[in-house]
Image 1 (spheres, rainbow, N blue to C red):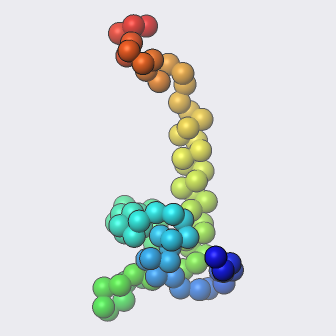
Image 2: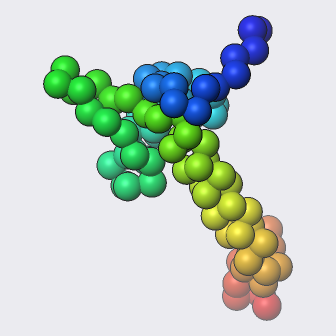
Length: 87
């Protein structure tokens, strides 16, 4: 697999963003619709993403998901066969 260094002002297509981060193109579009990732819409309807904006958004998404996993306590995880009633 060839390595590609992103230029800060490079514009990326939806599929390129999806491939870089191991998600489906529909996930990238959902991030745009939810306001988590900014994009420029071309007259054709296609989306283009600033490499710099994508990197910043991905750092924020990673920080959010790391915070969520740290904030879960063992009491939030049901034990197999017991659920919450067995506590």
